[in-house]
Image (cartoon, rainbow, N blue to C red; front, top):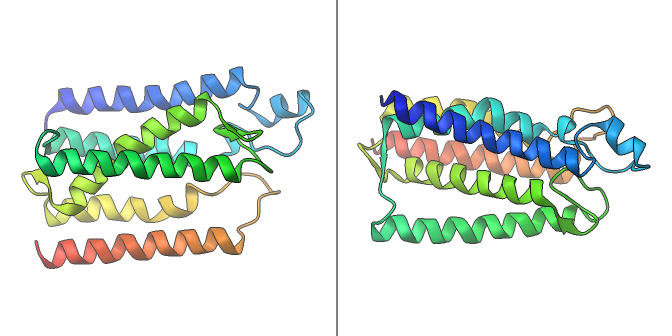
Length: 199
């Protein structure tokens, strides 16, 4: 394990989370109190957003562990293709967030626009998705061990729920959210099973 890579990745990851909080505060979306003081009674605050907490407490440590232990080949043909695919996926996600934020926004998107915190979140998602895709496709050097596949998969399981949840009594776990969680968890464990089988 390369502790310099670990430390650097932790600092960068948590800095991106803090940048989301700072930009959310500048946009009056950090806390419920800020929202209410600006007569906004429909949007979710950054502090209520489960995705922000999951990023800080699960995703940053997992990505940091990955980059401290494994090599990632950015400049191979598959590395470049996966970078391009991840960019397209994240741009699609940002548009999905924007459309969902038209009626009920959050710190990333509201009033029909992706705000600075949303673009920072998109950058964060890009890095995390690309790193995890390399891990689960077996494109790291060395290939991720069976034990580490489980180390990544177990905490990523609650990620699918927590990333959607809003820590408020007003939030409901609706059918669409349940479907997203189910697809995410089942997909994760199918890929995990395949990686374990062929490791």
